[in-house]
Image (cartoon, rainbow, N blue to C red):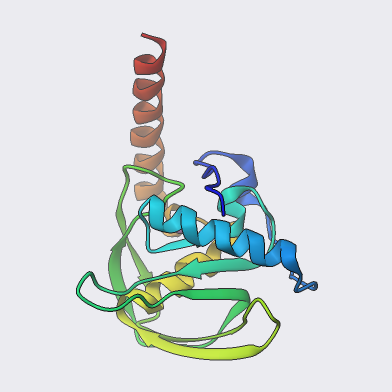
Length: 174
Ligand code: NI
């Protein structure tokens, strides 16, 4: 297993659409293992393959609470097959460090996906996991949570984030 470098906004790869996985081989399992390790190390509750520069439809999630057992989901070719209700929760993203904002999503969602062997599963969830599934699948379409903000909030985000990036670079150059 190895840690992968997480791409940050505004890296253009994050805007790309990922391709379906057709081969369930060792390379896929290696990538999934690396993503799980990278997610836990960050630490984060979800990670999508394009965030580590691989344009493949693969996500990993663990939205369990601290006092609960792990609930690791490795989902290949995931899709939301049904959703209902509405939830507005504050979200963040390992590719947009230091920024959080409320996003409107389904409150309850059902995801269909394959495991690394190619077997099909379904998982129904609400709360944080439902939000996580929708957030990570968005990544496979090249959509970040900040793309779902209102135009005004989005332009505020851009200004704030770019300023933050410049400050970080200034620290590095100093
Ligand atoms: Ni994200």
